[in-house]
Image 1 (cartoon, rainbow, N blue to C red):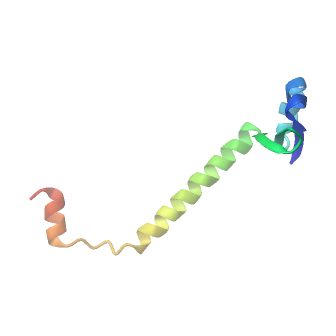
Image 2 (cartoon, rainbow, N blue to C red; image 1 turned 90 degrees about the vertical axis):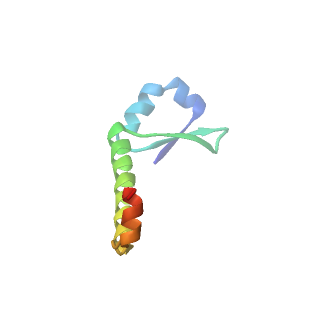
Image 3 (tube, one colour; image 1 turned 60 degrees about the vertical axis):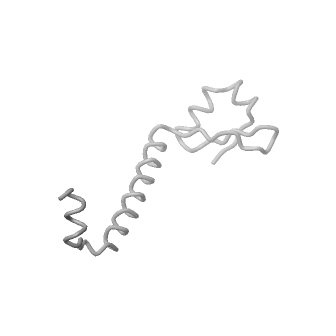
Amino acid sequence: MTSTTLSAFRAHQSKVLDDAQREPVEILSRGSRRRAVVVSPEFFDRAIQALEDQSDIRGAAEARGETGQVSHEELMAELGL
């Protein structure tokens, strides 16, 4: 990951956006404080997809832990009968 200062980002936005197509670029304020990270749309989409996949994997694991059995009373109550 490359880094640039906030003032350099303001002065050279096009270059930073071009650089971000190859790798994430962190924007620093006051020399070391991270303010933002600029990434390509493809990188962002892959990251979001990975997070959603992890959520699905956790949900499936939790579902496998359930017995899947419902008592007659629970079913009747759920159906309002």
